[in-house]
Image 1: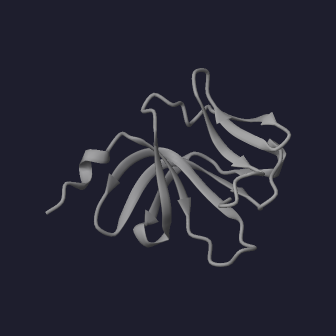
Image 2: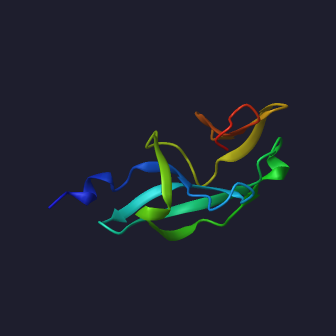
Length: 118
């Protein structure tokens, strides 16, 4: 049996599957609480935006809460630094075509007009 609890406590940035090209992008960022063969459970925030998000105002931010995401809805996972403050991090426009999520020490790309996958 695979050890699914080794990820507990890690901070993940998850992009979920889009069913069609015009669908909103769904990014989930938070701390892994647990996972198993069927799902991952995180304490996290959600971020929703359309293809052409150019500023923090173009991104809808969800509340921090525990969420369960089925593995079959996950497209990609990026492991972030375990010290990243995902609860208090803020969206920041780092240029006229890029928005990052930043805390006091780190920042991570949220959306870029140059990134075709978003």
